[in-house]
Amino acid sequence: MEQTFIMIKPDGVKRNLIGDIVSRFEHKGFRLIDAKLLNVSRETAELHYCDLREKPFFGELVAFIISGPVFAMVWEGEHAVKNARALIGATNPVEASAGTIRGDYALDVSSNIIHGSDSLENADREIGLFFKGQAAF
Ligand code: ATP
Ligand code: MG
Image (cartoon, rainbow, N blue to C red; front, side, top):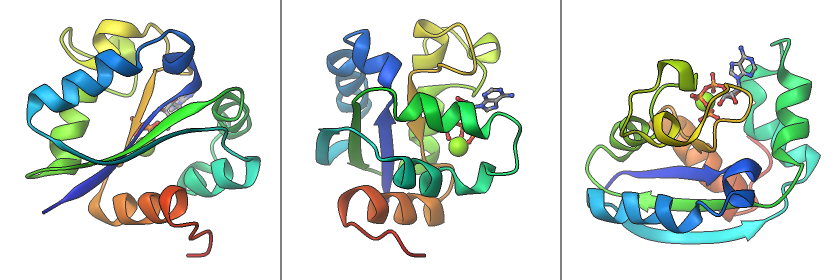
């Protein structure tokens, strides 16, 4: 069964949205496999977002992710990667539909509450990085 990596970002944790977001994933039909609250190191944040290292906002993105605790999770279900991205909504909350997590809770692309893996390959990589201590890939 497919698994995906989901992370409530520091803004979502500060705003006490963990319970609501976990509920949304449970109600959708996903099964929770693992979860933890943690402070992300700079190295892990840079590895997590390594595909974006050339982007002008990379420094700001890493600083944001390490600015406070995150809630990291592994969820399992049919088409987990795509179904989770649909629950989360568009990257930019301006474009995210009402009823999605970003559509309901976020205003700005730089603090958009939640991360979800964008492919099966990245889901495996991110689960390895956050839950199995696999920094090298
Ligand atoms: P995430 O990987 O966090 O789930 P995503 O897959 O929807 O988001 P990505 O393209 O992977 O989008 O971008 C990662 C994160 O970088 C976004 O969630 C957002 O917080 C930030 N970001 C993306 N584009 C911009 C931008 N133009 N300006 C500022 N921040 C941005
Ligand atoms: Mg992404």
